Image 1 (cartoon, rainbow, N blue to C red):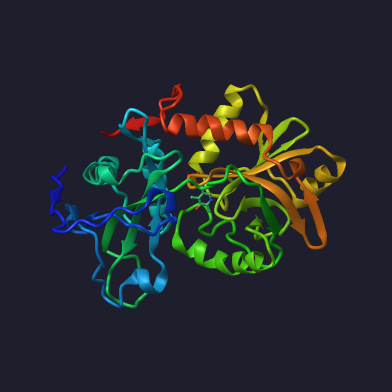
Image 2: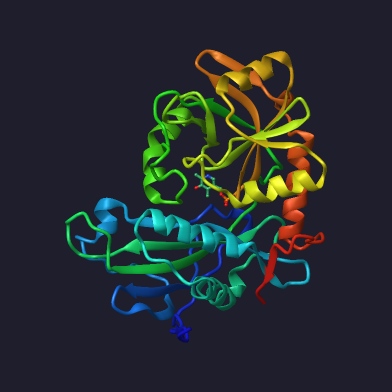
Length: 355
Ligand SMILES: *Cc1c(COP(=O)(O)O)cnc(C)c1O
């Protein structure tokens, strides 16, 4: 691999107050960039001062959403060291997204070096207060400057990082969820299994409307039958029904979440039956009516797990777990955050130490 060239910022920014961090706002002093050109492959990996990108106004990413991204975190342990959680899974997934969007494959070693070298350089930015971390946002954009609809030959992979606070400063708070019956996020054959900006653009209207009606997220139904549950907001979703754990299967329009995968592994370790299958909204509301819907929660890197306290569909409303965090939801949160911040053992080899 080509050596990463580092150009340091001449003036460093003031670090934000760790108790007042707003998600994704306080970007650090540097960023990682590597170029791809079809005839050269990946070249010129570099860390440069954080700042605006110069992009041709005709660049494909700006018109046709030729973009993919990832999200992971660097955690500071009690001893002061810094570590990542399953970064290999993020890079693998980025390459799967790249394949769907006709973007080039990036070698695992290069993509990971971009992350680890930037985190090392910005290590003073990794906060140490409880539940805080450094959020890492790798992304890839198609930059050919031409308005024809074709895959780009010139591409960049960029990594930016920012300190983020505790997702729940007051403890795990159950959220109210609305079952979306108008808009869909993704359909089979579309880009639902890719982590790409277009899926998020398509989701904005429904989440805006839900928020205006007092709900914090929407529960997405499948785009074909409008019947089966797919995800909650930008998280995967799990339910405990009559003692069993249920989660939608990876049907092509559901994103293969790393938190989802890790939760399934932990639940199996603990002896729970985990079913990955189609779950209709009707089945879910029926279980709630029968009193067998015991817990519901979302899973994702940002929040880890997010308990669901209320579900609404049309005029129907159900309260889950008495609007309290459920036992399994709490246990998953404690176990995963324990592993991520190095407070408990990591039997699956998920942790990658950085410095
Ligand atoms: C990123 C993402 C998730 C969660 O994935 P993690 O790897 O657990 O962070 C779930 N759904 C969507 C749509 C996502 O973009």
